[in-house]
Image 1 (cartoon, rainbow, N blue to C red):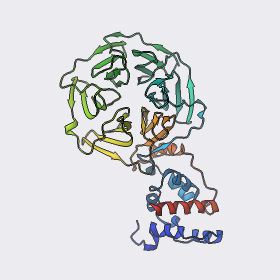
Image 2 (tube, one colour; image 1 turned 60 degrees about the vertical axis):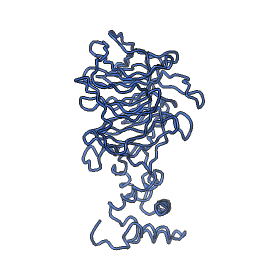
Image 3 (cartoon, rainbow, N blue to C red; image 1 turned 90 degrees about the horizontal axis):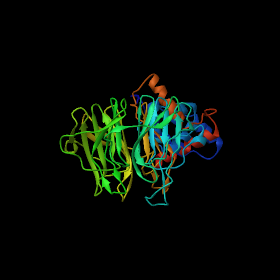
Length: 436
C-alpha cells in the first residue's frame, strides 16, 4: 500500500461509494469515473478484495473491466482453493461413481472403474469397467478401448508408460490380480505374476518405490478380515513377495491413505474394523521398519476418518474429506514432513462438497479430485475439481502454466471498461463484500 494513501482510497470507502450509487445509468457512469472507484486502488488492494469473494462473485468480476479481468486471472487468487473444472468436451466424461482410480501420466489423467451404490446404502452395485482419459491441455474427456475387467476399491499406479491396476472388488469377488494398460500402444492384459502375492482384498493402498509397487492393508468383506501386511511387486520380474517387517506394526485397516516421501511410505487413518483412526505411521522402504510417528506430530491433526485420499507435493502431504460413519468431511489438511506439523487449509469461500470415496491425482503442481459420494446431493458425483498448490511468488513460465488452469473456469472477457453490465457486476461484488 502506498504511504500517501488517504482514507477515501480505502477498500471500505470505495465499496461504500459503489453500494450507494443510484439506479440511474448516468449516476452509475459518473461514479465509475471518479477517483473513488475500485479501479483506482492499487493492484495489491484489489487482489485482497477479490480474494474475499465466493467463486461465483469472483467470476462475475471478470466482467467489470479489463483491469479486473487481468487480476482475476492472477494465480495467487487460486492457491490452495478447490474450484470446478469445466470440460471443453464433456461427452467422453465418466458417469458418476465411487472409488474409481485416477492417475496422471505426462499431460493426461486416467480414470478407471468404480461403482455406484444401491440408493443410499453402502451395498456395491454396477461395478464399472470403463477407462477414461482427460487431456489437461485441451480439457477434453475421451473413453478408451481396452480388455480390462470391472474393478472398484482397487488401486492404480504408473510405472514407465503403463498403468497397473491391483486388487479390488470385481462385483462377484475380492481379487489379488494385476492388470496392465500401456498408454502408448493402448494394449491391456492380465499380468502373469509369480511369487507370494497378498490374499484377495479391496480398499488397500499402493505406492511405487524404485522398480517395485508396495501395497499395504485392505480388507475382505466376505471373510470380514482387515489387514496390515506389506507386499512388494517387482515390475521387471512380475514377482510378488511378502515383506518381512521390523518394529511395532500399525493396526490393521482399510480405506486409509498411503503416500511416498523420500525413502518412506506414510500411512494415515482408515478403519480398523473396530474404530476409525487418525494415526500416522512411517515405513522405511530400505530397512523395512515401521514407526508410529503420531506422538511426534504437532498442530491439530485431522479427525479420525476413512474413505479419503492423500497426495504429496514438495515436503507436504495433503488430505481431503472422508467420513467416520457419523459425518462426511470437507476439510483440507496439510502435513509437513520436515516440521512434523499439521495445518488445516482455509477453504471458506470455495467450499468443496463433503466427499468420500473419491479419487484424486497430481498434475505438475495441482491436485485434481474426481467423483465420490457427495453428502449434500446424497448421491454419487462425476464432478472434477482443481486445486492449485503452487506458491504465490512463482514467476516466469510456471506462472503461465497456472494461467491455463485458471482458464478452465471459462472467464468472460469484458468488451469495454464502462458498460452497464460491468457496473452491475461491480455493485454486486461491493455489496457482497460489505455483507461479510
